[in-house]
Length: 259
DNA sequence: ATGGTGGGTCACCCA
Image 1 (cartoon, protein in one colour):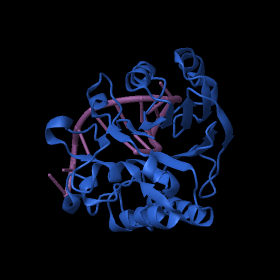
Image 2 (image 1 turned 120 degrees about the vertical axis):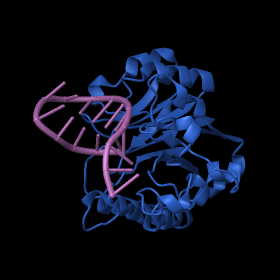
Image 3 (image 1 turned 90 degrees about the horizontal axis):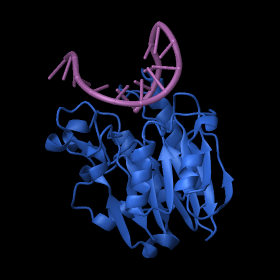
Image 4 (image 1 turned 90 degrees about the vertical axis):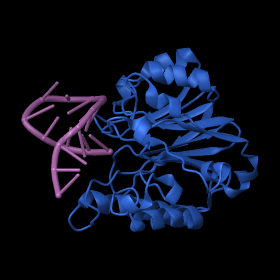
């Protein structure tokens, strides 16, 4: 099974890019974030016609939105509400092989890394805390967790640890929180483990760079984790960096894991 | 220290 995650930043605007990626990368299960559309406008028919007829999605107008699309049946589905909000930041489905897939879109957290001054940052930290409590209580087995977690936890997940220490996505309270979620939540950071600790890995480059590829000031905000029982089934991981060079790209690229 | 770009919807929100 090849599973991928991608913050697509509008599924309707980038439908052709999405279809091209699914075929080119030969994806079985794709998790999307920031679909930015209500369910009635989700391009279900086009994706089904292309070969991915099994779909679950939760969208809202303008913001957020998550989806799981698959070649093979999704036999169960569910979602949870986090931090008391009904925004569309989580969806879960089980494949016919009995593998559960959690797809998360963690709040970005705004610009000021202070929970008093910035309620968006407080929301983000609370979201991570709730995820940690949840997975501590329900130790994952035969589960995969993917998504745009909006945190780059390790030094080699950012272009400069020093210059990003006070930048939301790489502040110590966030990176400590995400590491704790991995360790205490029962997860294995499969993509980082595949590439090893020594090399930079990014999945996001800002739209605001003059030349994103030349400056290469990226961050690894998107993640694929597996429960420990699946760790030794990992065959390959890929960062689909070429998608950042597409016409009208998302600022995130897909990452994928083959089990 | 600042402002830089992009998406959605319709004057701003969000990333």
